[in-house]
Image (cartoon, rainbow, N blue to C red; front, side, top):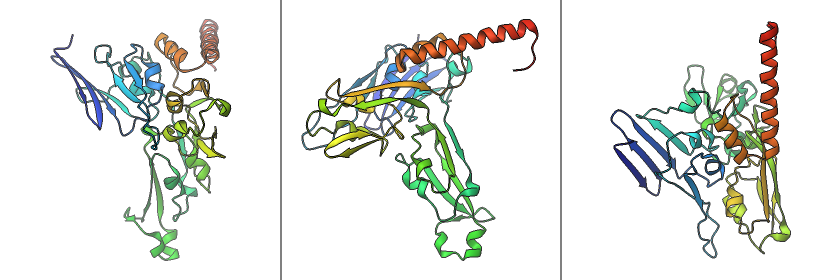
Length: 308
């Protein structure tokens, strides 16, 4: 048991701590990064994370749900840290970002598959940087001796031709919406989604004039307004569930996750999390795949196969 427990809630962050003799466990929720989605609350095995809808102020946009974490229930397992698509939660041990459930291979990590080919990138293009709804991309132009060039337009054509382009992406915070990829005119970026799913807005059940889901959606373009109704562009939706939480009518917005891209793992803890995060069909498919792979591996070892 910890010698001391501390919970601090400010406008910027929610912090939980366990202070022991030789270890200090710390969980930090960055409120500036949190979008009030469903992922951490659904995945938490201790049901320590709760979402609370914030009251709607007439004339103002809806606010995303507020997250609270019960210090009495939290055991700092870091599953919320691992699965947050926006990198809003961080768990440390003695100041180090350690994910013990990943190291012990009892839980997978999300796969953020983002490929960048800067050889195709024009030196005067910043389309991906400007398109990113979360400001996670920074395009930098460098001279041959690695000096940063702020204004490429002031250079001669020869000087421009010698520039190198560097694209930095804060991948740990990227939910892989693919907006950068679709806005890049040169095919520099290739992004594969983490979460796949289905989302439907039943306009006939929406309260008149309601745009709460659109107000809180963190991905500009995933939801849009047309003829006073909110529509979905599933090309960019990351299925985080921030919209579902604030929707005032249960049946008006339907969302389910059908696939989650993650590293390979055999884990009861992951199976339980998957059951809460995704559809029962998806869980069944994954368990069947694991069973088939396990059986194949057993046969391979028994027969001494060396191939795949």
